[in-house]
Each structure stands twice: as C-alpha cells, then as structure tokens.
Image (cartoon, rainbow, N blue to C red; front, side):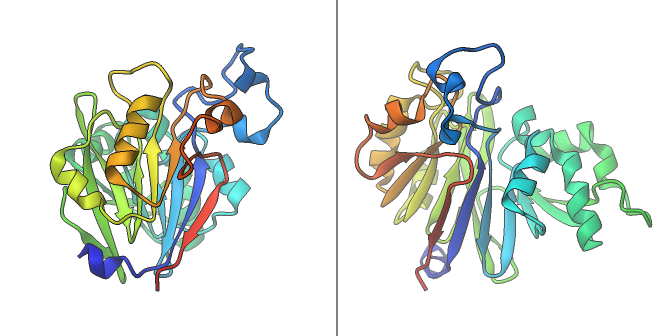
Length: 265
C-alpha cells in the first residue's frame, strides 16, 4: 500500500503550529511572545494536505476561520481528525462555511474516541441540511489502522498515544503528520518508513506527560529517519530562532503558513 501511494504529489500547508494557548500567550513577555517575527506567532495546530486533486483538512481548531482566510482555503473534501481536545476540535462550527460553499455534506474521519466526542458535544453537525446550509453538515467515518481511499488518494491512519488516549496521525504518500504524541507504538513505526517529510509534535523543552519534548522529538525523528522533519505544536517557551540554532541539519522549526510540496510522480 505505502509503496503504491508514495508516488503521489502531496502539498502540505501548516495552518497553525501552536499549542492549546497559542503564541503570543496572553500576558506573557517572553522572547517568543514579544517577538515581531511572524514565525513566532502561532495559531492552534492544524494543517491542510492536498493530493490527487483533493484537499484534506487535519483538525478544526478554534482559529480555523482565520487560518482559512489567511491561506485562501475555499474547498475541503474531507476532514482528518487526530483527537478531540478543544484546540483540535472546537472550531468544528467553521466547517459550515465549506458546506455552504460546496452545498454538500463533508465527510470526517477519526477513531471511535474522536467520533464519540463529535456525537456527544456537537450533535447538530450530524443533522440533515436545510436550504440555508447554516450549520455544518457532516458524515462521520470510523477508522483505525487500516488505509482507506478518498477518490484516488490512499490515506493511512497512524495509531498513536496521547497520554492515555488512543489518537491518530495521518500519512498521505511520503508525508506524515503526527501531533500531540507521547508514544508511537511499534506497529505504527512500521507505517512511518521512507518518509520525505515528517511533521512531528514538539511541545517544549521540559518533559510533558502527553506530548513529546524537544529531546524526545529529536530522538523519534532520528528513529524514523525522514528526509526532512518539521517540528509542530509548540508552546511559546520555544522561540523560533533559538530553537532553530540547536537542531540537526534535516530538522527544522515549523511556522504558520509554511508550505511544502513533495512530488514523487
């Protein structure tokens, strides 16, 4: 499966690389928060991946509307959810704009935990559309570790651990996106071979019970061995330039709006 999928061209746009509080943090005067460099301004973590003529949105954080306006995202074919924490889910209402523009229901994919939260917390998104399309209209699809197709695009879920939660990362072609990770099961490591680009969780310097620290991210990046690793989901404790100066040559600090296209066709 992965060998066949690897020939596809994949464009990834990082909509946001911030943690749950974003950067600058309210009331903080640290170097990141007072910086005038836009690479230190981080909205909540989310991304768009385009492949095979399809646009896939990863997560719907509370900054989704502004991110979509900034990057001129006017069409989404499916949403790939990682997990149901507020900074990855609570912008779900902004999906109504895409449903209205497309006059169609929007398929969303996630594991059982993820979809259970949508059913319980946002049941109105699962109703039939009306003539006004004034609410999101979603169809939910439960996935685990099995690859599936959207059009001609093969999508590989990557089971991960986030504290005590089972969550998902995503791989399309030779690009993988792993956020909010504390552990990568051995079986999932096998799904992360031969990557051109790895987007990898990197919360802060100090260890955290539900996220990778800088040191842990670098260790896992070395194990996976992607040609290029981009660090994401960072708190304001990690200043862009200071962190960049400490990294190996093939590892870099992500920032809002970073776009990377991998063409292996």
